Length: 372
Image 1: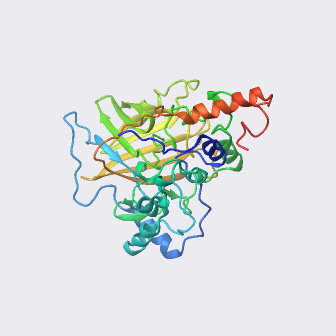
Image 2: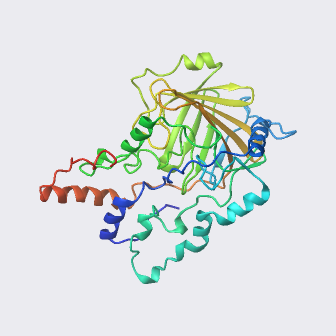
Image 3: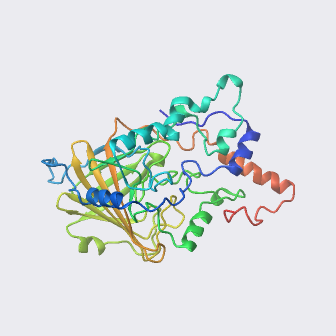
Protein backbone atom coordinates (compact mmCIF):
# COMPACT_ATOMS: atom_id res chain seq x y z
CA UNK A 1 0.00 0.00 0.00
CA UNK A 2 1.22 3.49 -0.83
CA UNK A 3 0.55 6.50 1.36
CA UNK A 4 -1.17 9.26 -0.63
CA UNK A 5 -2.24 12.80 0.18
CA UNK A 6 -5.98 13.54 0.29
CA UNK A 7 -7.48 15.75 -2.44
CA UNK A 8 -7.36 19.50 -1.95
CA UNK A 9 -7.69 22.46 -4.27
CA UNK A 10 -4.46 24.08 -5.52
CA UNK A 11 -5.32 27.46 -4.01
CA UNK A 12 -6.09 25.93 -0.63
CA UNK A 13 -2.89 23.88 -0.79
CA UNK A 14 -0.68 26.93 -1.36
CA UNK A 15 -2.35 28.90 1.44
CA UNK A 16 -2.19 25.97 3.83
CA UNK A 17 1.43 25.11 3.15
CA UNK A 18 2.44 28.61 4.20
CA UNK A 19 0.81 28.16 7.61
CA UNK A 20 1.34 24.46 8.22
CA UNK A 21 4.20 22.83 10.11
CA UNK A 22 6.27 20.24 8.26
CA UNK A 23 4.34 17.04 7.66
CA UNK A 24 5.14 14.53 10.34
CA UNK A 25 6.60 17.10 12.71
CA UNK A 26 4.43 17.42 15.79
CA UNK A 27 4.74 20.79 17.50
CA UNK A 28 7.28 20.84 20.30
CA UNK A 29 5.38 20.65 23.60
CA UNK A 30 5.57 23.32 26.25
CA UNK A 31 7.61 22.39 29.30
CA UNK A 32 5.56 20.45 31.83
CA UNK A 33 5.55 21.19 35.52
CA UNK A 34 8.03 19.64 37.95
CA UNK A 35 7.21 16.01 38.81
CA UNK A 36 6.11 15.12 42.33
CA UNK A 37 8.38 13.24 44.71
CA UNK A 38 6.30 10.10 44.17
CA UNK A 39 6.58 10.48 40.38
CA UNK A 40 10.36 10.86 40.67
CA UNK A 41 10.51 7.69 42.77
CA UNK A 42 8.38 5.75 40.24
CA UNK A 43 10.55 6.92 37.36
CA UNK A 44 13.75 5.97 39.16
CA UNK A 45 12.39 2.48 39.82
CA UNK A 46 11.36 2.05 36.19
CA UNK A 47 14.71 3.18 34.87
CA UNK A 48 16.54 0.86 37.26
CA UNK A 49 14.53 -2.16 36.11
CA UNK A 50 16.51 -4.90 34.26
CA UNK A 51 16.94 -4.70 30.50
CA UNK A 52 15.36 -8.13 30.04
CA UNK A 53 12.08 -9.52 31.36
CA UNK A 54 12.40 -11.96 34.29
CA UNK A 55 13.53 -15.36 33.07
CA UNK A 56 13.83 -14.32 29.42
CA UNK A 57 16.82 -15.45 27.38
CA UNK A 58 17.26 -13.91 23.93
CA UNK A 59 17.38 -16.36 21.03
CA UNK A 60 20.57 -16.45 19.01
CA UNK A 61 21.29 -16.61 15.32
CA UNK A 62 23.55 -19.28 13.85
CA UNK A 63 26.33 -16.67 13.78
CA UNK A 64 26.07 -16.42 17.58
CA UNK A 65 24.55 -12.94 17.88
CA UNK A 66 21.36 -12.28 19.86
CA UNK A 67 18.48 -12.23 17.37
CA UNK A 68 17.22 -8.70 16.73
CA UNK A 69 16.12 -9.44 13.18
CA UNK A 70 12.65 -8.79 11.84
CA UNK A 71 10.24 -5.92 11.32
CA UNK A 72 9.57 -3.79 14.39
CA UNK A 73 7.48 -0.70 15.09
CA UNK A 74 7.50 2.21 17.55
CA UNK A 75 4.04 3.45 16.53
CA UNK A 76 2.67 4.97 19.71
CA UNK A 77 0.86 7.87 21.34
CA UNK A 78 4.14 8.32 23.20
CA UNK A 79 6.57 10.68 21.45
CA UNK A 80 10.08 11.94 21.95
CA UNK A 81 9.14 14.86 24.22
CA UNK A 82 6.54 14.91 26.98
CA UNK A 83 3.34 16.92 26.34
CA UNK A 84 2.46 19.63 28.83
CA UNK A 85 -0.58 17.73 30.14
CA UNK A 86 1.71 15.15 31.76
CA UNK A 87 3.94 15.97 34.72
CA UNK A 88 5.71 12.62 35.12
CA UNK A 89 7.33 9.87 33.07
CA UNK A 90 5.30 6.92 34.38
CA UNK A 91 1.53 6.36 34.24
CA UNK A 92 -0.59 3.86 36.15
CA UNK A 93 -2.93 1.54 34.24
CA UNK A 94 -5.89 3.84 34.99
CA UNK A 95 -3.96 6.96 33.97
CA UNK A 96 -2.85 5.31 30.74
CA UNK A 97 -6.42 4.28 29.91
CA UNK A 98 -7.68 7.84 30.43
CA UNK A 99 -4.81 9.32 28.43
CA UNK A 100 -5.53 6.88 25.61
CA UNK A 101 -9.21 7.85 25.54
CA UNK A 102 -8.40 11.57 25.58
CA UNK A 103 -5.58 11.47 23.02
CA UNK A 104 -6.39 13.72 20.05
CA UNK A 105 -4.81 11.32 17.54
CA UNK A 106 -6.98 8.45 18.78
CA UNK A 107 -10.09 10.62 18.60
CA UNK A 108 -9.14 11.69 15.10
CA UNK A 109 -8.66 8.09 13.98
CA UNK A 110 -12.18 7.30 15.18
CA UNK A 111 -13.90 10.40 13.75
CA UNK A 112 -11.59 11.64 10.96
CA UNK A 113 -12.46 15.14 12.23
CA UNK A 114 -15.95 14.59 10.77
CA UNK A 115 -14.71 15.43 7.28
CA UNK A 116 -17.18 14.69 4.49
CA UNK A 117 -15.86 13.76 1.09
CA UNK A 118 -19.37 14.21 -0.31
CA UNK A 119 -18.96 17.96 0.12
CA UNK A 120 -16.40 18.04 -2.70
CA UNK A 121 -12.76 18.99 -2.42
CA UNK A 122 -11.47 19.56 1.07
CA UNK A 123 -11.01 23.21 1.92
CA UNK A 124 -7.45 22.93 3.16
CA UNK A 125 -8.36 23.80 6.75
CA UNK A 126 -6.95 20.46 7.85
CA UNK A 127 -3.59 21.39 6.30
CA UNK A 128 -3.45 24.57 8.35
CA UNK A 129 -3.56 22.31 11.41
CA UNK A 130 -0.66 20.26 10.09
CA UNK A 131 -3.01 17.56 8.77
CA UNK A 132 -2.00 16.81 5.22
CA UNK A 133 -3.69 13.40 5.31
CA UNK A 134 -7.12 12.24 6.29
CA UNK A 135 -7.29 9.63 9.04
CA UNK A 136 -7.50 6.64 6.70
CA UNK A 137 -3.89 7.16 5.63
CA UNK A 138 -2.22 7.68 8.98
CA UNK A 139 -1.03 5.12 11.51
CA UNK A 140 0.45 6.92 14.52
CA UNK A 141 -0.44 4.15 16.97
CA UNK A 142 -3.42 4.08 19.29
CA UNK A 143 -1.83 3.38 22.66
CA UNK A 144 0.88 4.77 24.87
CA UNK A 145 4.18 2.94 25.02
CA UNK A 146 4.81 0.25 27.58
CA UNK A 147 8.56 0.12 28.21
CA UNK A 148 9.91 -2.55 30.56
CA UNK A 149 6.41 -3.05 31.94
CA UNK A 150 5.58 0.62 32.64
CA UNK A 151 3.45 3.12 30.70
CA UNK A 152 5.48 6.06 29.44
CA UNK A 153 4.56 9.66 28.57
CA UNK A 154 7.77 10.37 26.60
CA UNK A 155 10.74 8.57 25.15
CA UNK A 156 13.02 11.04 26.92
CA UNK A 157 13.78 9.88 30.46
CA UNK A 158 16.46 12.42 31.32
CA UNK A 159 16.11 15.33 32.01
CA UNK A 160 13.18 14.61 34.28
CA UNK A 161 10.86 17.08 32.50
CA UNK A 162 11.01 15.01 29.30
CA UNK A 163 12.22 17.90 27.12
CA UNK A 164 15.25 18.24 24.86
CA UNK A 165 17.63 20.58 26.74
CA UNK A 166 18.58 22.79 23.80
CA UNK A 167 20.85 25.73 24.17
CA UNK A 168 18.98 28.79 22.77
CA UNK A 169 21.22 29.18 19.73
CA UNK A 170 20.84 25.49 18.84
CA UNK A 171 17.05 25.69 18.95
CA UNK A 172 17.12 28.63 16.54
CA UNK A 173 19.43 26.81 14.14
CA UNK A 174 17.14 23.79 14.00
CA UNK A 175 14.25 26.03 12.97
CA UNK A 176 16.36 27.64 10.25
CA UNK A 177 17.69 24.46 8.65
CA UNK A 178 14.30 22.93 7.90
CA UNK A 179 14.12 24.90 4.65
CA UNK A 180 11.36 27.35 3.71
CA UNK A 181 12.61 28.74 0.40
CA UNK A 182 10.81 28.24 -2.92
CA UNK A 183 13.31 29.39 -5.52
CA UNK A 184 14.74 25.89 -6.13
CA UNK A 185 14.39 22.37 -4.68
CA UNK A 186 17.60 22.65 -2.66
CA UNK A 187 15.94 25.33 -0.51
CA UNK A 188 13.35 22.85 0.71
CA UNK A 189 13.90 20.43 3.57
CA UNK A 190 15.37 17.00 2.89
CA UNK A 191 12.02 15.38 3.73
CA UNK A 192 10.20 17.22 0.95
CA UNK A 193 13.02 16.23 -1.41
CA UNK A 194 12.54 12.56 -0.39
CA UNK A 195 16.13 12.28 0.83
CA UNK A 196 15.13 11.46 4.41
CA UNK A 197 11.88 10.57 6.09
CA UNK A 198 9.87 13.33 7.74
CA UNK A 199 10.36 13.41 11.53
CA UNK A 200 13.65 11.50 11.04
CA UNK A 201 12.40 8.01 11.93
CA UNK A 202 15.75 6.42 11.12
CA UNK A 203 17.50 8.62 13.64
CA UNK A 204 19.62 8.52 15.45
CA UNK A 205 17.90 8.45 17.78
CA UNK A 206 14.92 6.58 16.35
CA UNK A 207 11.70 8.58 16.31
CA UNK A 208 8.01 8.09 15.49
CA UNK A 209 5.33 10.11 13.73
CA UNK A 210 2.07 10.01 11.80
CA UNK A 211 2.70 6.80 9.86
CA UNK A 212 5.31 4.32 8.57
CA UNK A 213 6.83 3.76 11.99
CA UNK A 214 8.41 0.50 10.87
CA UNK A 215 12.00 -0.72 11.01
CA UNK A 216 13.56 -3.79 9.47
CA UNK A 217 16.69 -5.05 11.20
CA UNK A 218 19.04 -7.37 9.32
CA UNK A 219 22.15 -8.87 10.89
CA UNK A 220 25.37 -10.37 9.54
CA UNK A 221 28.69 -11.22 11.23
CA UNK A 222 30.22 -7.91 10.18
CA UNK A 223 27.33 -5.43 9.97
CA UNK A 224 23.80 -4.60 11.06
CA UNK A 225 21.34 -2.77 8.80
CA UNK A 226 18.50 -0.74 10.33
CA UNK A 227 16.07 0.33 7.63
CA UNK A 228 13.32 2.85 8.31
CA UNK A 229 10.71 2.51 5.56
CA UNK A 230 9.88 6.22 5.77
CA UNK A 231 11.89 7.27 2.67
CA UNK A 232 13.81 3.98 2.79
CA UNK A 233 16.43 5.31 5.19
CA UNK A 234 18.95 2.55 5.86
CA UNK A 235 21.86 2.77 8.25
CA UNK A 236 24.53 0.18 7.48
CA UNK A 237 26.46 -0.18 10.72
CA UNK A 238 29.82 -1.99 10.57
CA UNK A 239 30.53 -4.20 13.59
CA UNK A 240 33.77 -4.54 15.53
CA UNK A 241 34.94 -6.63 18.46
CA UNK A 242 35.30 -3.79 20.94
CA UNK A 243 34.21 -0.20 21.42
CA UNK A 244 37.78 1.01 21.03
CA UNK A 245 38.17 -0.82 17.73
CA UNK A 246 34.86 0.53 16.48
CA UNK A 247 35.73 4.13 17.33
CA UNK A 248 39.01 3.77 15.47
CA UNK A 249 37.05 3.07 12.29
CA UNK A 250 34.92 6.22 12.17
CA UNK A 251 35.00 7.94 8.79
CA UNK A 252 37.04 11.13 8.23
CA UNK A 253 35.20 14.17 9.67
CA UNK A 254 34.69 15.62 6.19
CA UNK A 255 32.27 12.76 5.42
CA UNK A 256 28.94 13.57 7.06
CA UNK A 257 26.11 11.18 6.14
CA UNK A 258 22.59 12.46 6.75
CA UNK A 259 22.12 9.93 9.58
CA UNK A 260 25.69 10.29 10.79
CA UNK A 261 28.69 8.00 10.88
CA UNK A 262 27.67 4.92 12.89
CA UNK A 263 29.84 2.06 14.15
CA UNK A 264 28.79 -0.84 16.36
CA UNK A 265 29.88 -3.61 18.70
CA UNK A 266 28.27 -6.15 21.02
CA UNK A 267 28.21 -5.62 24.77
CA UNK A 268 26.99 -8.97 26.03
CA UNK A 269 23.49 -9.38 24.60
CA UNK A 270 23.17 -5.69 23.66
CA UNK A 271 24.00 -4.13 20.31
CA UNK A 272 25.84 -0.87 20.90
CA UNK A 273 25.98 1.85 18.21
CA UNK A 274 27.92 5.10 18.35
CA UNK A 275 27.20 7.90 15.87
CA UNK A 276 29.13 11.10 15.20
CA UNK A 277 29.36 13.65 12.37
CA UNK A 278 25.67 13.93 11.47
CA UNK A 279 24.95 16.06 8.43
CA UNK A 280 23.47 19.38 9.63
CA UNK A 281 20.94 19.28 6.77
CA UNK A 282 19.28 16.20 8.28
CA UNK A 283 15.75 16.19 9.64
CA UNK A 284 14.29 15.91 13.10
CA UNK A 285 14.65 17.56 16.48
CA UNK A 286 18.19 16.31 17.11
CA UNK A 287 21.21 18.36 16.17
CA UNK A 288 24.77 17.18 16.66
CA UNK A 289 27.83 19.43 16.64
CA UNK A 290 31.20 18.19 15.28
CA UNK A 291 32.17 17.19 18.82
CA UNK A 292 28.91 15.49 19.80
CA UNK A 293 27.94 11.83 19.79
CA UNK A 294 24.87 9.61 20.13
CA UNK A 295 25.10 6.18 21.75
CA UNK A 296 22.35 3.61 21.18
CA UNK A 297 21.71 0.24 22.82
CA UNK A 298 19.42 -2.46 21.40
CA UNK A 299 18.48 -5.33 23.77
CA UNK A 300 15.85 -8.05 23.44
CA UNK A 301 13.61 -7.42 26.45
CA UNK A 302 11.20 -10.23 25.67
CA UNK A 303 9.92 -12.34 22.79
CA UNK A 304 7.75 -9.39 21.73
CA UNK A 305 9.88 -6.36 22.49
CA UNK A 306 13.27 -4.79 21.88
CA UNK A 307 14.37 -2.26 24.46
CA UNK A 308 15.97 0.69 22.67
CA UNK A 309 18.02 3.16 24.72
CA UNK A 310 19.89 6.24 23.58
CA UNK A 311 22.16 8.92 25.03
CA UNK A 312 22.91 12.26 23.36
CA UNK A 313 26.15 13.85 24.57
CA UNK A 314 26.91 17.20 23.00
CA UNK A 315 27.83 20.10 25.35
CA UNK A 316 28.07 22.48 22.40
CA UNK A 317 24.38 22.02 21.59
CA UNK A 318 22.61 20.99 24.80
CA UNK A 319 22.74 22.14 28.40
CA UNK A 320 23.18 18.55 29.61
CA UNK A 321 23.46 14.97 28.45
CA UNK A 322 19.99 13.65 27.66
CA UNK A 323 18.69 10.09 27.46
CA UNK A 324 15.72 8.07 26.29
CA UNK A 325 14.12 4.63 26.36
CA UNK A 326 11.78 3.23 23.71
CA UNK A 327 9.97 -0.02 23.05
CA UNK A 328 10.11 -1.64 19.60
CA UNK A 329 7.30 -4.13 19.10
CA UNK A 330 6.64 -6.70 16.34
CA UNK A 331 5.10 -5.28 13.16
CA UNK A 332 3.03 -7.32 10.69
CA UNK A 333 5.04 -5.93 7.80
CA UNK A 334 6.24 -2.87 5.92
CA UNK A 335 4.08 -0.61 3.78
CA UNK A 336 5.87 1.02 0.88
CA UNK A 337 6.58 4.71 1.27
CA UNK A 338 6.47 6.02 -2.31
CA UNK A 339 7.68 9.49 -1.48
CA UNK A 340 7.71 11.08 -4.94
CA UNK A 341 4.46 9.47 -6.16
CA UNK A 342 1.94 12.26 -6.54
CA UNK A 343 4.42 14.78 -5.08
CA UNK A 344 2.57 17.78 -6.46
CA UNK A 345 3.42 19.77 -3.34
CA UNK A 346 6.99 20.31 -4.57
CA UNK A 347 5.72 21.24 -8.05
CA UNK A 348 3.28 23.73 -6.56
CA UNK A 349 5.94 25.34 -4.36
CA UNK A 350 8.35 25.82 -7.27
CA UNK A 351 5.54 27.17 -9.47
CA UNK A 352 5.08 29.81 -6.79
CA UNK A 353 8.72 30.74 -7.20
CA UNK A 354 8.37 31.04 -10.96
CA UNK A 355 5.25 33.16 -10.53
CA UNK A 356 7.28 35.44 -8.26
CA UNK A 357 9.91 35.65 -11.01
CA UNK A 358 7.30 36.76 -13.51
CA UNK A 359 6.10 39.44 -11.10
CA UNK A 360 9.63 40.63 -10.43
CA UNK A 361 9.52 39.56 -6.77
CA UNK A 362 12.87 38.77 -5.18
CA UNK A 363 12.66 35.16 -3.97
CA UNK A 364 15.55 35.71 -1.59
CA UNK A 365 13.81 38.31 0.53
CA UNK A 366 14.11 37.75 4.32
CA UNK A 367 11.70 35.19 5.70
CA UNK A 368 11.75 32.80 2.75
CA UNK A 369 14.93 31.02 3.79
CA UNK A 370 15.45 31.74 7.46
CA UNK A 371 12.40 30.02 8.92
CA UNK A 372 10.76 33.34 9.71
